[in-house]
Image 1 (spheres, rainbow, N blue to C red):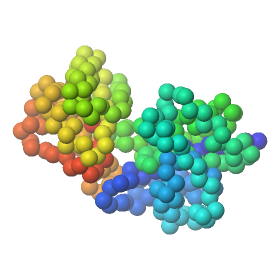
Image 2: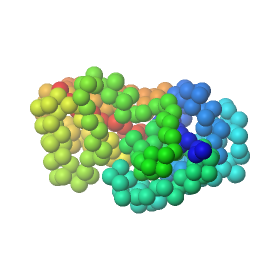
Image 3: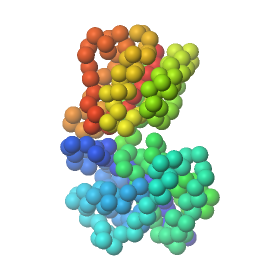
Image 4: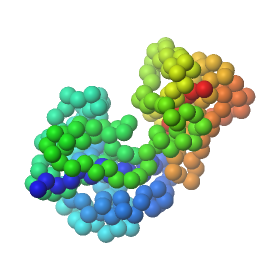
Length: 251
């Protein structure tokens, strides 16, 4: 008998100036399952220990944090991602093959969604290890629901280029696809580039294209702004360069 690979969501306040109680966004059943796990696969062991410490404050941990076995995904997976294959994650699942349940966790939200982890899930399926996603916040879907854009046909396209001319080119491509097909285009950016990306969007998009931003989702300071570009320009609405933000555009 193998163990189970649990996909454990993390709160969306990673890197934010303030944090909310885990119970505000994480179901009790998810926290209980997380508290019971000893073996983990993660992006960063230090931040995962900090998250598990928060879990332990409301749900006693079955194993002390010092005795937990945490394996980090390689640095190249963080830099290049693992969603296209190429990284063999099977060795990370040795504990599951020995009958132990294993948790997969990312810095924020659902692992393997806009974050590394898909290689681990793929390896689990190949090894016959059950995969169980636990309920928790997923920023992309929360932002889409709050945007007023098409939720029946949408795509997440990751990051747009940081180089200005390439970024403008990509924005035009996404806008063209959204306006022709009606498919909402969802993307993200490193928070310190929020302002630069917003400026590029407002300078590049057509005036009647609808643009939405959702910042600090699940926090008390959460805010979603969704207007046509024309209204954006007149409203003077701005973003800060510290809060994680999801961007979406469509018609």
